[in-house]
Image (tube, rainbow, N blue to C red; front, top):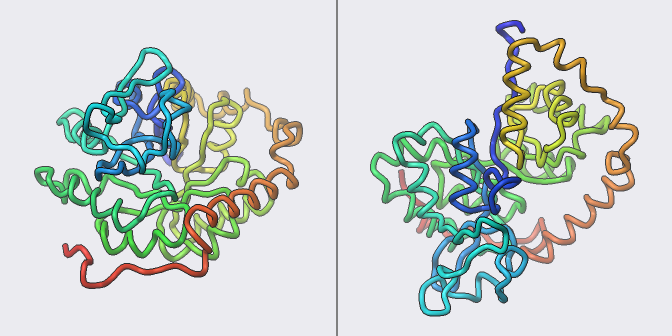
Length: 313
């Protein structure tokens, strides 16, 4: 392989979530132990103001408990601090503070952290609470802040991110290239896109636009070797995967013999997989817009943060 060939980084999607319960310290630690360059996780805020690492707005799917996170307390006899995952080996729900503590361990200070900001959150409250945790760390401006990437789905969150967490890099997470271009192009430096959205002709055009503008591209959630190799062909910057060991092993093999490894993986799946055709891609686009606007309001009509409480650097 030539020295100029750069391969995508490996970021653990909810940690090494194919092996350990998603969004748990065990899952994060496993991804880091595998050699992942970064981890990705999701945030919600409890009723008593604790930022927790959790994907769904409600607890049932992964813990079996009932209720929305924003309506449940973290502390107390019935607090979420006592919940365990359904998936084995059972794990506690981690807080944002616990996850930051993990990343601040000397041996983990190379690991990047992609925070998927769920649209059910109040961005003002969430980002203020996150700032409190981040700014408590020693040397956080140099040892922590540069490693955090805020993933934003809805344009309402952009101004709050700039005001409350101005030191964090920002990305747009999405499934729609038109939304990415219209609402996020000038506001973020990274685009974290669903793999299927980049398989089309417009996906190729978008990838070229990002390269010309110096924008980075991440793809999710890429678990199949054929898809990983296609992301390599595209020149993607980061692969988000549940199977960190799988991508890291393929990446190691590519470094030994790039051309031979790549030639072993066909591109036929792009034409034989229904979800990579335009109708399902457009259907996903429409359903995602509906979901996001129902949760966080219209894309073109939302409140902005007050300048008087902007975080000063």
